[in-house]
Length: 238
Ligand code: 13P
Image (cartoon, rainbow, N blue to C red; front, top):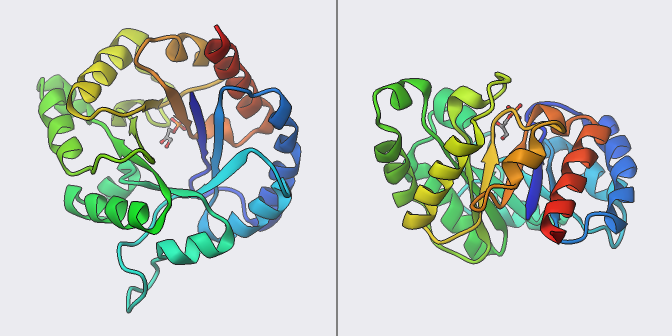
Protein backbone atom coordinates (compact mmCIF):
# COMPACT_ATOMS: atom_id res chain seq x y z
CA UNK A 1 0.00 0.00 0.00
CA UNK A 2 1.31 3.46 -0.90
CA UNK A 3 -0.17 6.77 0.25
CA UNK A 4 1.23 9.88 -1.43
CA UNK A 5 0.27 13.46 -0.63
CA UNK A 6 0.49 15.82 -3.61
CA UNK A 7 0.67 19.30 -2.13
CA UNK A 8 0.41 20.97 -5.57
CA UNK A 9 1.25 24.71 -5.26
CA UNK A 10 0.74 24.83 -1.50
CA UNK A 11 3.19 25.10 1.41
CA UNK A 12 6.34 27.17 1.14
CA UNK A 13 9.46 26.06 2.99
CA UNK A 14 8.33 27.26 6.40
CA UNK A 15 4.95 25.48 6.35
CA UNK A 16 6.50 22.40 4.77
CA UNK A 17 9.03 22.06 7.59
CA UNK A 18 6.29 22.39 10.21
CA UNK A 19 4.11 19.79 8.50
CA UNK A 20 7.04 17.38 8.15
CA UNK A 21 7.86 17.68 11.84
CA UNK A 22 4.23 16.79 12.65
CA UNK A 23 4.04 13.67 10.52
CA UNK A 24 7.30 12.10 11.66
CA UNK A 25 5.09 10.56 14.36
CA UNK A 26 3.49 8.44 11.63
CA UNK A 27 6.60 6.31 11.44
CA UNK A 28 5.66 3.75 14.07
CA UNK A 29 1.98 3.44 13.14
CA UNK A 30 2.01 3.09 9.39
CA UNK A 31 3.56 -0.33 8.97
CA UNK A 32 2.74 -1.93 5.62
CA UNK A 33 2.30 1.52 4.04
CA UNK A 34 4.83 3.49 2.00
CA UNK A 35 4.15 7.10 2.92
CA UNK A 36 5.22 9.82 0.46
CA UNK A 37 4.81 13.60 0.40
CA UNK A 38 5.28 15.70 -2.75
CA UNK A 39 6.00 19.37 -1.92
CA UNK A 40 6.69 22.13 -4.45
CA UNK A 41 10.35 22.20 -5.62
CA UNK A 42 11.27 25.10 -3.33
CA UNK A 43 10.03 23.23 -0.25
CA UNK A 44 11.67 19.85 -0.91
CA UNK A 45 14.75 20.51 1.20
CA UNK A 46 12.81 21.95 4.15
CA UNK A 47 10.50 18.91 4.10
CA UNK A 48 13.43 16.49 4.11
CA UNK A 49 15.04 18.40 6.98
CA UNK A 50 11.75 18.55 8.90
CA UNK A 51 11.29 14.79 8.62
CA UNK A 52 14.79 14.25 9.98
CA UNK A 53 17.20 11.34 9.68
CA UNK A 54 15.76 7.87 9.47
CA UNK A 55 12.16 8.87 8.75
CA UNK A 56 10.24 6.30 6.73
CA UNK A 57 8.26 9.07 5.02
CA UNK A 58 9.73 9.66 1.54
CA UNK A 59 9.82 12.96 -0.31
CA UNK A 60 9.01 13.08 -4.05
CA UNK A 61 8.96 16.04 -6.44
CA UNK A 62 5.86 16.95 -8.47
CA UNK A 63 7.70 16.81 -11.80
CA UNK A 64 11.14 16.13 -13.27
CA UNK A 65 12.82 16.97 -16.58
CA UNK A 66 14.24 14.34 -18.95
CA UNK A 67 17.65 15.96 -19.52
CA UNK A 68 20.40 15.96 -16.90
CA UNK A 69 21.06 19.68 -17.41
CA UNK A 70 20.72 22.30 -20.11
CA UNK A 71 18.90 25.40 -21.28
CA UNK A 72 15.45 24.46 -19.94
CA UNK A 73 14.22 27.48 -17.99
CA UNK A 74 11.95 26.56 -15.10
CA UNK A 75 12.75 22.84 -15.15
CA UNK A 76 14.55 20.62 -12.60
CA UNK A 77 16.51 17.44 -13.39
CA UNK A 78 16.66 14.06 -11.67
CA UNK A 79 20.28 14.44 -10.46
CA UNK A 80 19.35 17.79 -8.86
CA UNK A 81 16.52 16.08 -6.98
CA UNK A 82 18.69 13.16 -5.89
CA UNK A 83 21.30 15.58 -4.55
CA UNK A 84 18.67 16.95 -2.15
CA UNK A 85 17.64 13.50 -0.92
CA UNK A 86 14.45 13.33 -2.99
CA UNK A 87 13.43 9.73 -3.68
CA UNK A 88 10.98 10.04 -6.57
CA UNK A 89 8.79 12.23 -8.73
CA UNK A 90 5.24 12.49 -10.03
CA UNK A 91 4.99 12.71 -13.82
CA UNK A 92 2.02 13.42 -16.07
CA UNK A 93 -0.36 14.90 -13.54
CA UNK A 94 -3.54 15.98 -15.33
CA UNK A 95 -2.99 19.59 -14.22
CA UNK A 96 0.29 19.51 -16.17
CA UNK A 97 -1.31 17.75 -19.13
CA UNK A 98 -4.23 20.18 -19.28
CA UNK A 99 -2.59 23.47 -18.39
CA UNK A 100 1.11 23.15 -19.18
CA UNK A 101 1.16 21.27 -22.46
CA UNK A 102 2.36 17.92 -21.12
CA UNK A 103 1.86 15.13 -23.65
CA UNK A 104 2.07 11.33 -23.50
CA UNK A 105 5.45 11.68 -25.18
CA UNK A 106 6.93 14.11 -22.62
CA UNK A 107 5.43 12.11 -19.76
CA UNK A 108 7.18 9.00 -21.07
CA UNK A 109 10.48 10.86 -21.42
CA UNK A 110 10.25 12.26 -17.91
CA UNK A 111 9.49 8.82 -16.46
CA UNK A 112 12.35 7.11 -18.36
CA UNK A 113 14.90 9.70 -17.26
CA UNK A 114 13.78 9.64 -13.63
CA UNK A 115 13.96 5.84 -13.48
CA UNK A 116 17.34 5.75 -15.17
CA UNK A 117 18.69 8.24 -12.60
CA UNK A 118 17.42 6.05 -9.75
CA UNK A 119 14.25 7.88 -8.73
CA UNK A 120 10.88 6.24 -8.14
CA UNK A 121 8.01 7.46 -10.31
CA UNK A 122 4.29 8.01 -9.86
CA UNK A 123 2.91 8.28 -13.41
CA UNK A 124 -0.60 9.75 -13.60
CA UNK A 125 -3.33 8.79 -16.06
CA UNK A 126 -7.06 9.49 -16.17
CA UNK A 127 -9.94 10.39 -18.43
CA UNK A 128 -11.89 13.65 -18.54
CA UNK A 129 -15.62 13.81 -17.99
CA UNK A 130 -16.13 14.21 -21.75
CA UNK A 131 -14.04 11.07 -22.40
CA UNK A 132 -16.16 9.08 -19.95
CA UNK A 133 -19.44 10.37 -21.38
CA UNK A 134 -18.27 9.45 -24.88
CA UNK A 135 -17.34 5.97 -23.58
CA UNK A 136 -13.73 6.68 -24.48
CA UNK A 137 -12.28 5.96 -21.03
CA UNK A 138 -10.51 2.73 -21.96
CA UNK A 139 -9.15 4.14 -25.23
CA UNK A 140 -7.75 7.20 -23.43
CA UNK A 141 -6.20 5.12 -20.66
CA UNK A 142 -4.69 2.76 -23.21
CA UNK A 143 -2.96 5.60 -25.05
CA UNK A 144 -1.67 7.20 -21.84
CA UNK A 145 -0.42 3.89 -20.46
CA UNK A 146 1.25 2.95 -23.73
CA UNK A 147 3.71 5.81 -23.15
CA UNK A 148 4.63 4.76 -19.60
CA UNK A 149 7.62 2.43 -19.12
CA UNK A 150 7.40 -0.73 -17.00
CA UNK A 151 9.75 -0.67 -14.04
CA UNK A 152 9.79 -1.97 -10.46
CA UNK A 153 10.19 1.61 -9.18
CA UNK A 154 7.18 2.93 -11.14
CA UNK A 155 3.57 3.01 -9.96
CA UNK A 156 0.60 4.37 -11.88
CA UNK A 157 -1.94 6.75 -10.33
CA UNK A 158 -5.44 6.57 -11.82
CA UNK A 159 -6.85 10.06 -11.40
CA UNK A 160 -10.10 10.62 -13.29
CA UNK A 161 -9.96 14.34 -14.12
CA UNK A 162 -13.62 14.85 -13.15
CA UNK A 163 -12.86 13.64 -9.62
CA UNK A 164 -9.88 15.92 -8.93
CA UNK A 165 -10.59 18.73 -6.48
CA UNK A 166 -14.33 18.40 -7.09
CA UNK A 167 -15.42 16.36 -4.09
CA UNK A 168 -16.85 13.89 -6.66
CA UNK A 169 -14.88 10.78 -5.79
CA UNK A 170 -15.14 7.88 -8.23
CA UNK A 171 -17.36 5.18 -6.78
CA UNK A 172 -15.39 2.20 -5.57
CA UNK A 173 -16.87 0.20 -8.50
CA UNK A 174 -15.61 2.73 -11.08
CA UNK A 175 -12.19 2.86 -9.41
CA UNK A 176 -11.93 -0.94 -9.21
CA UNK A 177 -12.96 -1.36 -12.85
CA UNK A 178 -10.43 1.22 -14.10
CA UNK A 179 -7.64 -0.20 -11.92
CA UNK A 180 -8.26 -3.75 -13.16
CA UNK A 181 -8.20 -2.45 -16.74
CA UNK A 182 -4.92 -0.56 -16.14
CA UNK A 183 -3.33 -3.66 -14.60
CA UNK A 184 -4.37 -5.71 -17.63
CA UNK A 185 -2.19 -3.34 -19.70
CA UNK A 186 0.64 -2.59 -17.27
CA UNK A 187 1.55 -4.94 -14.41
CA UNK A 188 2.14 -2.51 -11.56
CA UNK A 189 0.70 -1.06 -8.38
CA UNK A 190 -2.11 1.39 -9.15
CA UNK A 191 -3.02 4.26 -6.81
CA UNK A 192 -6.39 6.02 -6.92
CA UNK A 193 -6.53 9.83 -6.88
CA UNK A 194 -9.44 12.27 -6.91
CA UNK A 195 -11.14 13.70 -3.82
CA UNK A 196 -9.77 11.05 -1.45
CA UNK A 197 -10.31 12.05 2.17
CA UNK A 198 -10.28 10.55 5.66
CA UNK A 199 -13.94 9.52 5.30
CA UNK A 200 -13.87 7.72 1.95
CA UNK A 201 -10.30 6.32 2.03
CA UNK A 202 -11.22 3.03 3.68
CA UNK A 203 -13.87 2.08 1.08
CA UNK A 204 -11.65 2.97 -1.87
CA UNK A 205 -8.54 1.31 -0.47
CA UNK A 206 -10.47 -1.89 0.28
CA UNK A 207 -10.96 -2.57 -3.44
CA UNK A 208 -8.78 -5.49 -4.55
CA UNK A 209 -6.93 -3.56 -7.29
CA UNK A 210 -6.55 -0.26 -5.41
CA UNK A 211 -3.00 -0.33 -4.04
CA UNK A 212 -2.95 3.09 -2.45
CA UNK A 213 -3.92 6.70 -3.02
CA UNK A 214 -2.56 9.95 -4.43
CA UNK A 215 -4.17 12.58 -2.23
CA UNK A 216 -4.42 16.29 -3.02
CA UNK A 217 -6.45 18.59 -0.78
CA UNK A 218 -6.77 16.17 2.15
CA UNK A 219 -2.98 15.73 2.30
CA UNK A 220 -2.45 19.38 3.25
CA UNK A 221 -3.73 18.86 6.77
CA UNK A 222 -1.51 16.63 8.93
CA UNK A 223 -4.46 15.11 10.80
CA UNK A 224 -6.44 14.10 7.73
CA UNK A 225 -3.30 12.86 5.95
CA UNK A 226 -2.46 10.74 8.99
CA UNK A 227 -5.99 9.38 9.14
CA UNK A 228 -5.72 8.23 5.50
CA UNK A 229 -2.33 6.61 6.18
CA UNK A 230 -3.69 4.82 9.23
CA UNK A 231 -6.73 3.54 7.30
CA UNK A 232 -4.28 2.17 4.71
CA UNK A 233 -2.19 0.53 7.44
CA UNK A 234 -5.29 -1.18 8.83
CA UNK A 235 -6.27 -2.52 5.41
CA UNK A 236 -2.69 -3.59 4.67
CA UNK A 237 -2.71 -5.55 7.93
CA UNK A 238 -6.03 -7.34 7.25
P1 13P B 1 -7.73 16.10 -4.72
O1 13P B 1 -7.47 15.01 -3.72
O2 13P B 1 -7.62 17.48 -4.15
O3 13P B 1 -8.98 15.85 -5.49
O4 13P B 1 -6.53 16.02 -5.78
C1 13P B 1 -6.20 14.80 -6.34
C2 13P B 1 -4.93 14.95 -7.07
O5 13P B 1 -4.87 15.59 -8.11
C3 13P B 1 -3.73 14.32 -6.50
O6 13P B 1 -2.66 14.37 -7.38
